[in-house]
Image 1 (tube, rainbow, N blue to C red):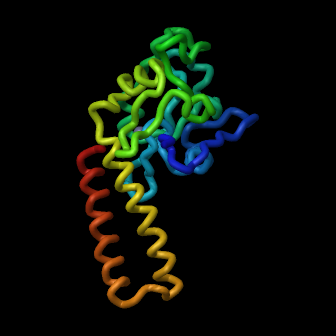
Image 2 (cartoon, helix red, strand yellow; image 1 turned 90 degrees about the vertical axis):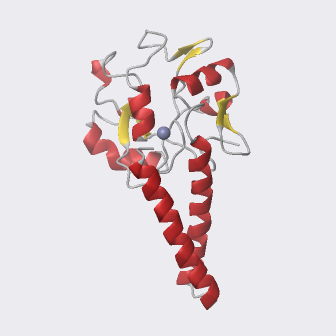
Length: 193
Ligand SMILES: [Zn+2]
């Protein structure tokens, strides 16, 4: 299974220099609302997602306003990745089994995958090393995946409800489940996940 499920990340190209703040809406759209690294959906998390610099600013200040260097990232991934850049060379994202693969590239899926239970694991030594750099082995990546699957089902029920296709009992179930889902997301948010 892909880390990003059915969402294909397509970062638009040939943009002039743009600030992180001005790029937020476009970047969120290009990343389908998902964290590029862990695939977390920020839509209902109320988390303030970050604009991550793929090549850290500390290493390449020239790319501070380079849209092709931006990654829509959850606060947790952004904070953990920070200034990590294992190759030490700003022009080389990865070499052999060290470094980072751009989440907006096709290569990302070659190195990282999601198990049936929702955990993110490496498919290659480079992918395994990325999981370690981003602490995926310590984080609840599977929990967010399950919550996201629940959210998608709830969206479908919401549509049915709007179209008047739910029975009164189903409608009540939908309202209760929607509240539970929001409670879970609020708890995760409060726990700074
Ligand atoms: Zn993330």
